[in-house]
Length: 327
Image (cartoon, rainbow, N blue to C red):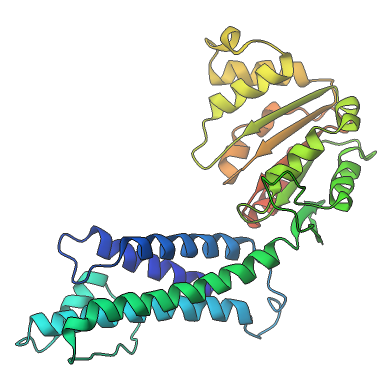
């Protein structure tokens, strides 16, 4: 994906300048923060974004706009690096050599160079970066509007989009419609006897956790499942801590009672307690299939309609969960 690659390239350039012992130019700290936040947001957005033209040869307009903004930011920064090097090293015949050493090899790109008004360069750089940030802010607004229109719920390896309402997370208003809530509840309480994994997928901040919490706290859900337990996985997960949390919630035992148990002991304790009982487990904020592989075998398939909800920002993870599903 060209847009994602452009964002990665821009972040590498910013990191190189920030971490270089003697950077050729100095970027405003607030602008660096704004650029970094925008790039991170757009990367997360693209990871979950399903383009309407993904199945055709047509370029997606939003992805092109993101790529253009990232390229523009790179060109602004690079051109000022070249200007600074040429000004400080008038005898150098190949200032680009230093730049290539600083950035590493990359695709050829037109980088303008201006020799006049070098004293105004910091102000020009600030304004040029400001313009790019403003464009990224506009793109971010569009991306947020798209993101709040849908969350992807994958079930039986079939994908469909369900709409969100315009409520804001943390405002006391729901960030999803009753239709979405009831749709997931129907999946959880269906007559399908096998253990099922129900992923809720979307970019960071879209309301996946809020949706899972709303379903989890419903009285009908509490009455339907004999055991309900919740664990937050996160990117830097700890399998023992996850099992510790799940066992404590499932068995109602104090965590202190379980503190001396190792990872395998906790896993067996969880398996034995869940065996024969209808359970609902929520695995919130899963980042990779490894965390699932290390824990899924401790969730028995009781043939009694037990369910597991997984929230994740990675769309490709849903198919992996199904592929690694133990029956």
